[in-house]
Image (cartoon, rainbow, N blue to C red):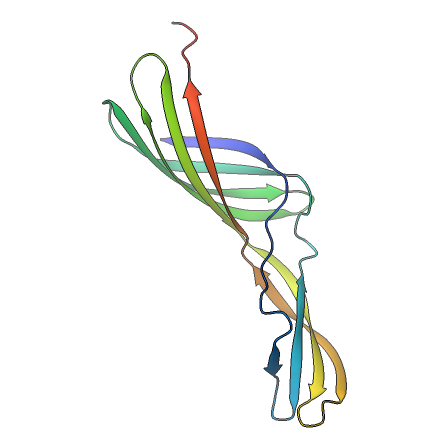
Length: 152
């Protein structure tokens, strides 16, 4: 079974403490206080997700189980990769059918984080620098579908 779709998302869930404010040694005489990450290229507003999936579905019977995996892109000025996996269960046969599906998605964004440097023993500020960081926002979706035949 194959499936492709497009969806609108309100915002990319980039959050978490990421251990901001912790002290980290740089070398024998220098420590750094870690600042919060800045994901400048991450979409902050409504974005479009396009995903192609492939999977398997149980043969005909009263209960249908479907598993899908796929990949695609999130778009809002910049394209970001996204991977998805879903598992669904529903009824089969003629007439009205019910289907419930849980989907988990993950993406990857790059950014920069500021390190505030200071001398280890005297706490004299030495300036600041930046380092690359990578975030992996994740989100889940629960879909409940009611399929009603329109005629034959």
